[in-house]
Amino acid sequence: MKSLNMGALGAALLLCGAALSPGHAAWEPSRPVEFIIPAGPGGGADIMARTIQGIVTKHNLMKQPMVVINKAGGAGGEGFLDVKNSKGNPHKIVITLSNLFTTPMATGIPFSWKDLTPVAMLALDEFVLWVNAEKPYKSVKEFIDAAKAAGGTFKMGGTGSKQEDQIITEAIQKATGVKLIYIPQAGGGAVAVQLVGNHVDSTVNNPNEAIAHWRAGKLRPLCVFDSKKLDYKDKIAGDAGWDSIPTCKSSGLDIEYLMLRGIFMTPGATPDQVAYYVELFQKVRQTDEWKKLMSDGAFNQTFMTGAEYTKWVTIEEKRHEDLMKAAGWLVK
Image (tube, rainbow, N blue to C red; front, side, top):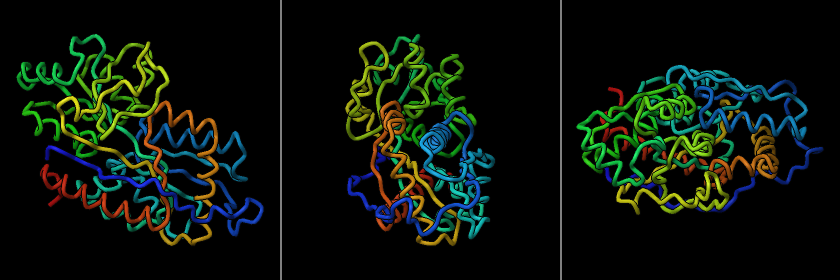
């Protein structure tokens, strides 16, 4: 398990329903829309969902309010089961991350993404290896050497257990032979705070979960878990920007991992209802606020919907099943 290659992603856009004009939509919400986050406050999914809520409100993109609700219990299972059990309710949507796959596989909760209605992939989120800026190691090699010298006492902070952050941590251990103590937290915001306070020695947080601390000179990025460097040139910390971070592979750590940021609806959603939300998120993606979120968080801006999105999710479910099985985390 030296390489977790997410595969080449096509840039083609399948704009299902995009031709509908706002005044001629076949369906639109008649009451407030609940936007479920199956994760805690301060993490990447929470940041994205609340940014979307702000954009929708500021630009009057919906006649009805959008209400954001965190349901993080059971590694996000609480949120997924809520949406699954709301069949036929088009006024409830959920933002997903890779716990779409990992939570049912690790816990055995009666849930599969196939229980929901796919709407759109909004983007793919990156992972970065972070350390406290006070520490002397400034490269992956120096970090790994220090972790090995520590004899298994280095702590890796991450969101949840048997989810994305721990999958990457497991891969780092297998690729390098280093032993790390994984310390789970409720969300990416808490993970970053733990690293700033030197309560853990490293994290693999998403960019937008750590950018404020990097900008403040508290954290240092060592590498990004993508096949290529990030293509964002704005300066974040002094003369350093996202494009200045080397890939982990080029730094001797042959691991690649990207995470879904997508939208699903409840079971039984009609094509007109799906088309409404596809059009809504197309409008969101055109705003300056969304473009700033993409830049600040150094997102891979791949967008998919329809059959293309469903195919991608199907492939990723199998990939995560293989990763979870290799780690011994599949529920018996």
